[in-house]
Amino acid sequence: MMAKYTSIGGQALIEGILMKSPEKTALCVRLPDGSIDTSYMEEKRLTKKYKILGLPVIRGVVAFIESLTQGYKALMISADKSGFADLEEENTQKTNDKKENSALLNIVMIIGAVLGVLLSVVLFMYLPRLLVSGIEWISGSQITSKLLRSCIEQFVKLSVFVLYVWAVSFMKDIKRVFMYHGAEHKTIFCYEKGLELTVENVREQKRFHPRCGTSFMILMILISVIFSTVLQMIFPGVYTIRWLWVLAKILMIPLICGVGYEVLKICGRYDNILTRIISAPGMWLQRLTTKEPEDSMIEI
Image (cartoon, rainbow, N blue to C red; front, side, top):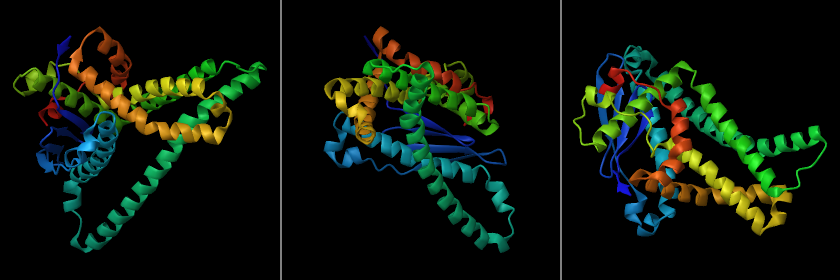
């Protein structure tokens, strides 16, 4: 069993990359004039402030929330900076309008986030169940095995996620983000190997990384399959009460998130047959969420 762990992580942004270490987080964005803007984000980790939040599983939930918060903030910063030249060309007379538009944009983004969560609940909780019910109606027979029903629902859930990622990968702007995603992975591999961070060295690295957020999402779905199956075996009647089943799955999300985080850390720390098998689905999906980057992207 070979250890191969570092704590460096990252995130693809709009025309840029965020790189994160335990001590510092750097945000690099390509400005419209072609130059690279580098800034640093303040680290306020709750796991360092409160030791109990650093315990296994719990730290995964905290890290997930912190990652979402920081990632959203970084995306907004990169979106603003990547259009910096256009903003400078605005007439000073439009300054107040720009502030109003910025406030309106924040409101729209919040509403969009809420709608996104609601859509996720519909797609990943209700759609699989509705499709299974549709299969039963078309076939004229009912699936009596709770295990089989659960497996079909989870397969539908996974299929919806993969199809969504595949569909958005054709969007021009998203494709560029996926290219930056590839550059981020290559850079981390280069750093982990102890090589000098040059365009040439980074270009030669793989773009599929076991600690990727894509792998984390797949792990969460697969772990939810196991947890849902076990829950149905322990409490057979919970599945028949729809509102109780949905509530149970919502309450399981933090546990699934925490366990997925720990599994991902293990896969990132060790390279053996077991970790490669666990990482395989996420590594495969990274063929959709990462693209070969341009040298200008690697330079960032």
